[in-house]
Length: 533
Image 1: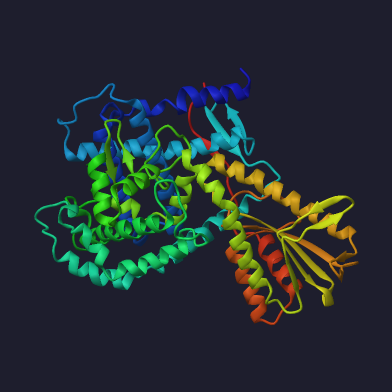
Image 2: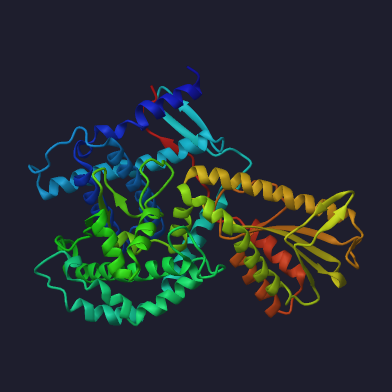
C-alpha cells in the first residue's frame, strides 16, 4: 500500500472502530446518553475550581470545546448503533457507571482531535508523515498559511462571546433567581421538578433578554421573517425564555457547588428526559408558543446523528434511537445563540431558507459600513459602485477615496458563518482565497483607470480589504496583500480614526498593522499515537 492508503486504512480500521471496544458502548443509548451529558456538565461546572487549582484557563476552555465536540461523536455512535448488543446496566454502581462514561467521553474527545487532523489532511490542508517503526502518524502544517494567527483569532472570538454574555441582564436575573431558589425542596432532587416553568414569561428579566436577542439573532431582519414553521420573533422568544429557565438551573448548580463542593452529587448536572410529545409541550409551556411552532424549532435544534459534521453546540437537543429526548440545561445555557441558530439552519432542509436571506443581511450590513465610513474626514464613499474598464464591469461593495491625499481603499464584504469543523475550515479557506483574488482584480482595474465618476484617481495609492461578517480563525494564505478584517473590528477602527481626526490612509495603516501582527505563539504539529498497520 502507498502511504496514503495506509493512512486511510488506519482511519477506517482503527480510528473509526476503536469506540466499539469501550464497555459503555455495549449499553443502550438511553442509558449512555444521559450519563455522557452529565459527565460533560459536571466537568464544565468545575471549570472555575480547576483554574483556581492551577489549570490554564485558556487551555481548559479549548479542552472543554474539544470535549463538547467529542460528546457529539459519542452520541452519534450510540444512536447509529440502534438497539443491537444491549447489556443490562443494573448491576453497576453509580461510580462504575460514571467511570465508564468518563472513559468513553475521553475517547470521544481524543477522537475529535485526531479526526480533525485526518479531515485537514484529506482536504490537503496538512501533511501526514508515518513512522511504521514507532507506530505513529504526525500531521504537519504545510508552508504557505499563517497558522500562528489562528490562536489569536480564537481568543478574540471567545472574548467577544463572553462580552456578549456579560451584557445580559445578570443583576435582574439573579434578583429573580434568589426568589425562585427559595421554592426548591432540596430533599427531593432534581432541580427541574421544582421550577414553575411559566414564571419566566412574566419575569422582569425576559423583556431585557428579548431586547438582547434583537441585537444578537439576525438584527438585520424584520421580526416577521419566516424560517419555515416559525418566524424571527418566535425564535427570539424561544431562546430568551428557554435560556432564562435553563440558566436558572445552571445558577442553582453553581450555588450548590459553592456550598457542597465535590459532594454535590444528587443535584449534579442532571439532563432532562422527555418523550417527543412531552418535550414539545414543555417548550410550549416555557415559551408560550403554539405547539406547531415549538415542534418546528425543536426539529431544527435536534442533533442529527447521520451528519459527521454537526455538533451539539448547534443542535443541543438529543433524540435517542427509541425517540426519547435528552436536554442538558447546563449545556444549552452556555451556547452562543447566534452561532447555534445559524449553524442549525445551515444543516439539512433549512439551508435554502437561510440562503434566500443572505442578500438582505449583506445589504443591511453594507449600509452600516457605508453610514459609518461617510464620517471619515475628507473621504468620499461609494457603495456597490459599477465601474467599467476595457469592456469589463466590476462592482466592489465599498470604495473609499480621499482625493486630497490621493488614496483609495476598495473592499468586498462576505457574510461567512464561523466554522465549527475541519471541513468547514477548508471551505472557508477556499472562499477567503476567492475573495482575496476578487479584491486583487478590483485593485488592478482601478489602477488602470484615471477617473471614478468625476474624481481623478490617477497616480493614487490603492489598497484592498476583505471584510467578513464574523471573525474567521482559519489559516490565512501568506504573502497576500489584501488584509482580512471582520465587520465589528472594521467599524471599531473607522470610529477610532474619526474620533482621532485622522484620515483614510491612517485607517488603512491601522488595519494593515493589525493584520500583519503575529501573536506570540506557534502551532505545533499534531502526533497521533496509534498503530498504523
